[in-house]
Image (cartoon, rainbow, N blue to C red; front, side, top):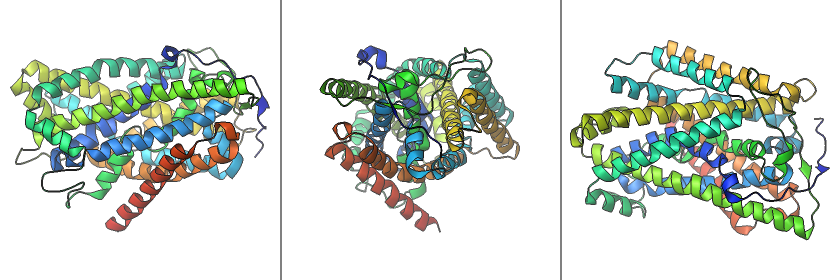
Length: 463
């Protein structure tokens, strides 16, 4: 591959904490429609809250993975995809294109959004609803002048408005016994079991682990958002803009390195401290609290129901319970909130996957696929995914939960692969003073072994 070596540039001064807020909102939004709203509440509605410890463990793994992804781009101003291509050659971009497209082409999240919307409106579900939603997402992303800014702004609005509302409903609907079950679940005590019930479907549990946060290759998009936000050496990278409404910017594929002086190392560590805090508060703390509270709501409203509905039906049962408990208006608002949160999760999924695949297409052959056409490649992958989704719905695939689980299991395997690669990249490519320390390396190693072992066990169980 013909990738230019890193060139010298000064390390920019660390930005104030309030100006660093942004990338974690996107990653949090990516998790809202998969782990937070669907898989963990679903598992809690079926098995109780004794499994909720695993949700906290899953998002903790992702915190450490995401920060190692951010570390490389903060230090170099290039994506981890470029860094891994330097090590592995063209096999790396090929892998990342296919391991992003195949797991995320299944539009289970937007199917769930359409299902909840149809319940709110009191009309039968039709495949035309998710198809229209997919096209609407493509239109919004196509017309947004700066793609990162469009994603960040919309996700902030949805999270800051939707999450507090759902929290209030959960507190209102939950009994003291539910809170007790939640506390016991955090230490692995369930109703008749410790840690895991004997009848749990391991494919669903593995998917929930993968989606305790963003999930799959979407975590790697943190690298692209570090560049887009201008963290550290990412200041020199340029931004992806709309081919219709945006002002074209120069996009740089290869990154930079800074002199390893005491001042620069101190500045890097200050950058590192602040972006860790941003990710800890926005992604880990908010994400974990959201999973816990939404799982508590599902447990309080659905767990004791004798004939539990299939699939995404537990969300519909939650809304109808809230209508009876509080008022029909609150039930409608709950459905509306869930619909919007799921819609914008799919929105951010498309934004992130398209960025990942377009970046890797350029890395595969920088001479043939030039960086000046990065926006065109982004929209190519965006609309290919939308067309694929339209075809999937047209062929009659409509059960949201099964589509989400299928994608989640595939994503768990990709997380196993890149968690090991990321640690190797940072340990071998970065200067010693800014490499991951023992605790960080140990956390990522445990995640690597966990995802690998769990994936193999799940495959063997289903053969």
